[in-house]
Image: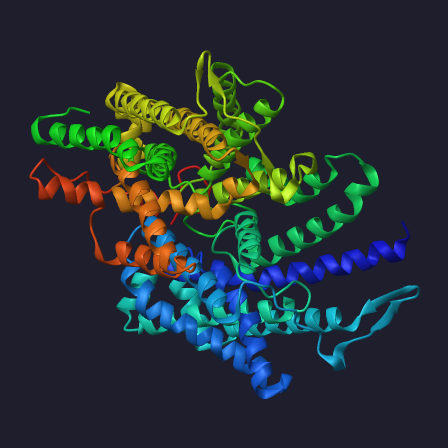
Amino acid sequence: MTLALLLEQLFNGVQFGLMLFLMAVGVTLVFGIMRVINLAHGALFMLGGYFLMAALAWTQSYALAVPLALIGGALVAVVIEIVVLRPLYRRGPLDQVLATFGLSLFFNEAVTVIWGRESIPLSIPPFLTGSVEIIPGAAYPIYRLVITGVAIVAGLLLYLLITRTRVGALIRAGSDNREIVAALGINISLLYTLVFALSAMLAALAGIMMGPLLSVEPGAGDPILILALVVVVIGGIGSVRGALVGALMVGIFDTLSRVLIPLVIQTNATSALVGMAVYVLMAVVLLFSRTGLFAAHRG
Amino acid sequence: MRFPGRRGALLLLLLAMAIVLPPYLGTYYTRFATQIAIYGMAALSVDLLLGYTGLITFGQAALFGVGAYAAGMLTVYGVTNAFVAWPLAILVSMLFALAIGSLSLRTRGFQFIMVTLAFAQMVYYFAQSLRNWGGDDGFTVPQRNHLGFVLLADHATFYYVVLGLLVLVVFIASRIVGSEFGMVIRGIRDNERRVAAVGFPPYRYKLVIFVIAGGIAGLAGALMANHAKFVSPATLSWQLSGELLAMVILGSANSLIGPILGAAFFLAFRDVLSDFTEHWMLFFGPLLVARVLLLKDGIWGMLLRATGAGDAPAAPEVDGPELTAPIADSKPGRSP
């Protein structure tokens, strides 16, 4: 194996990790602020891909379709938050998990009804095809570079939003102690809706960008959701920093193990080891820290 | 569990229906009832954790699937005697439960949900990667196991064996939750710290009930492999884990009968709606949301109240003070 190939895989790992970050940060924000575990988060990822596909067919323009798909994801999230989640805030985790699980079943089936059970190929935008040589000897697809850049920009914007704005201050305060925030006269239910819509937009963004790389099909978000949960467990539930570190760890570890394990071990068990690598990583982290790497307050 | 008066009568009525009705209705419904009994057993194992211990596991399908794979593989290898194959399947599931439980029980609350889900997914990928066993497609089991000279190929015979095992499991489970051990796990559900303060180490007790529940799920899985004569990674999917939780909640948690009724309701719902549409999930998802948002009780609780047969089983308070209080053993300096 050449160094160039290894570097290329490392890039892929970082890129996958950033996609996972977009997912995991939504899970962790919603948990940190609203104390809800959202198992419908994978459905929002999947809807991002479907909405892009539908909006493209309608507008024939990426410049219009991408914002439309993002808004679509946010609107679905607002409806979910108002209709299903609001009555659940005072309930235990069981009710939340079951209700959001029910939602994910519903959305997986709804897209089947509307767009069929077959997976829908979503092609890379024509102006982003091709590849460049970032390092001599390794051609890297432009599309992957672009989505990596978009994910970084989205992450930076999120960072600025949380650290530099009033809404961000409320988000931080809300995750520290929501009762006090509410007691100070802040409209906490509006804040919840905003946070949930924000997390949905990030999930939809990841779904949009991963659409051409994975496939757009019913249940496409479920494996990504579970990986995002692994990220959150590793990073520490409720911690945004933990989500970033955990996502990069999982992304790089997953990608590299897919390349390196088959080189070292060539038996029937290889593919099993590859599929399980990330979970072994999680088990190891749990052995050393019960609350993840960046344990945020309360658990 | 005591069976006073009307409650006992209600149970006997249900059991009588389970014994008399299926053969009378024909092969299709006998197989249908077999499925109910199997999923009911798996859901009961979830209820031991959820309703009695306050552990929300989102990975019970993995243990169910491991039991199914073990029984299926043993049969393919020629171990057709149920007295050998089923206990082995239970044992393998218990070992998996021990491994998964010893790690995931280090966490609690929300994290426990996610960690059980993740480990179950790990087992799922493991099963998917077994190329010799059909990978994603799974494999067919050549025949059902036999109980010495009793062959189980006949659907009615197999149904009664499954029903008998289900009754046995309910009996054993009721003895467990009624014992001193059962008091400790219920105490853990209600207030883990007090139980620890009284001198019972919660981790050990939780691990024991997790392994017992894993064994029950494994038996249900082994029966499923025999029932369907087919095993695939779908038996370990996270959707099934969620559906098992849904069955418990639909039927009433914290009661050993509720999960079985929940399984019956779930399968009947699917069966009836499948006649009209392949998209029955489109209705089940919102139904589950509605149950959580609007109803306080599951089916068993409603039955008990409607017949005046006693109080509905109290819904488990699984959130408890545990989630809002700082974690006792988290890093120093974190406590407010």
